Amino acid sequence: PLVRALGESPAASILNGLLELAWASPASTRRLKGLVFAVVARGLGCGHCEGKARLVLESEGLGASETEQILANLGGGGLDSFESLIVPFARDTVRYQNKAIHAAIRRLRQRCEPGPVLEAIGLASLANMVVRLDLLLDPAP
Image 1 (cartoon, one colour):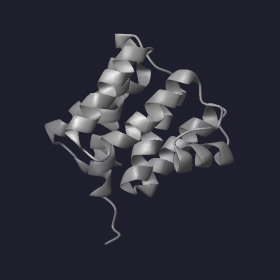
Image 2 (cartoon, one colour):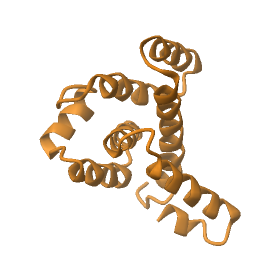
Image 3 (cartoon, rainbow, N blue to C red):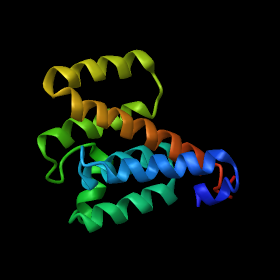
């Protein structure tokens, strides 16, 4: 809906391309992508985006109760070790507190290889942009 709402704007094709590339990237799992989008959507109160992310998580074998536990507690639900680091990081990016985000990135880099960390940073950035823009389409006050 967001890409369609942008109509003929050059931003529509750019956003569509970014989303396609992100979801096609083999550098992270669909499950991790779904988790990042779900966490950001929950943090920003976007039910539409959270619902779409939940569909991805469901298709990846994560049940509704497990997903709710992860979103409510930023952990649990059988997260692997990398997901356990990225889920709280994704939530921290919602607040846009640069010093805290930079410190979190440094901690991630100390524990993980640069490639997956870079991918996670990009996913969190994209999720924040998409969810914030999607909120503009929400007719609720």
